[in-house]
Structure formats: structure tokens, C-alpha cells
Length: 250
Image (cartoon, rainbow, N blue to C red; front, side, top):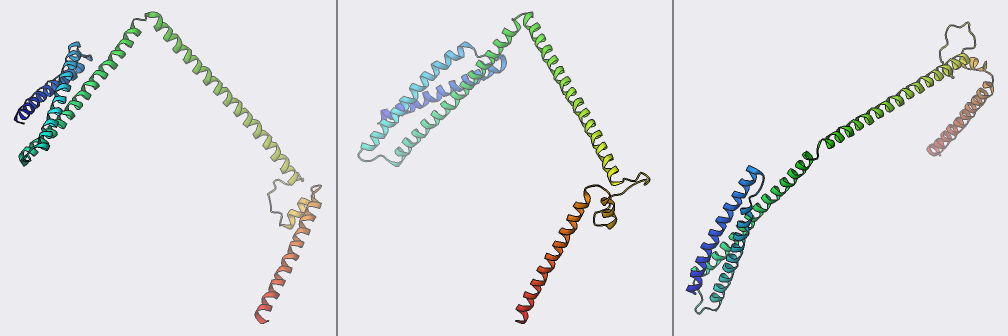
């Protein structure tokens, strides 16, 4: 058991040293990306070596912890509280080392992705620059074609607006003529300087409307309808009054 404990302490120191080197490599990769936008070749090689050593050390650490736990489970007498606490502490340290390893590994992966993205963008820019003057000329011609197309669309829109305006003017003229004819029908006597609209309930309005051909029959129908409605309303009111008196005095 003492041998296992000594091995645990040695493996803990090895894992701590490897994680420190791995963190420095991640910082170096970030600095290299920030300065030049690219990652150096030796960074990728060193990254693979350290990750391989770290994976082996962490697996060894986990195996040693399990071995010590088995010793505690089969020990007679049972281990003391301090030994049990030390075992739990080793497990916590292992979990912490794994978290640090995953966090640093993610940081390195992000730096590599940024470098790859920037490298592809630089390649596209270089390809565009080396395409020659013909591509620039083609781009200018294409831009000129788009501008001409925009001008044609603007001209079409203006023509449609002018046509709509002319149509509105024609409709306005037609409505003015219709209004003039209606005024002539309402005011047949040219000697009158001006006629005002008066509601049809006025007797003068009926007399004036009677001068228009074809309106006498309409006015007669309106008058008969009004008389009929008056008779119906009076009959209904009389019946309702009789029923009310019947219920009150009956």
C-alpha cells in the first residue's frame, strides 16, 4: 500500500508538470496567432507529444487510485479516516486535472480553427489579387451593367407614375363633367344664379324634383311608403297601448 501511495504522489507531480507545459503551449499558440495570424509548425508537433504523455499519465493516475481503493476495501483492520480522506482527495485532484486538460485542449482547438480560417481567407485574397487586370475589368463592367439596370428600373417607375397621373387627371375631368350635368338637372332654370342642395323632406324640394321627368312616380312611391309606415306604426302603438291597459286594469 505504501508503494501505491508513493506512486500516486509521483504521478500527481508528473500530471501537474505536464499540465503546466500544456498551458504554456496554449498561451504560446494564442500569442503566435495574435502576432502573425498563423500557428507555427512546432506547436502542432509539441501539442501532439504533450497530449499523448498527458493521456498516459492521467490513465495511470486513475488506475493507481482504483488500486488504492481496492486495498482499502480489503484491508483488515479498515483504513483510518485520514487514509480515506487522502483517497478522496486523490480522486478530486484527478477530476480537476481532467477539467484543466479539457479546458486547455479546447483553447488550443479554437486557436487552430482561427488560424485555419484566417489562412483560407488569405488564400482567397491572394487568388483574387493574382487573377490579373482582366478580372478587375470584368468587375467594373458588371458593376456598370448593374447601374444601367437600376437606371432602367427608375425610368420605368417614373413612366408608370406619369401614366397614373394622367389617368387621375382624366378621371377628375370626367367627374367634373358629371357634376356639371347633375347641377344642370337640379337647376333647370338658367336665370337662377346658383342652386343649393335641400333635403327631400322639404316641400319645395319635392316641387323642384317634380320638374325632372321620371321622378314623379318615384316621389309618389315614397309618399305612399311613408303613409303605409305611419299607419302600421300607429296600429302597432295602439295595440300595445290596449294590451298595456288590459294588463294594468284587467
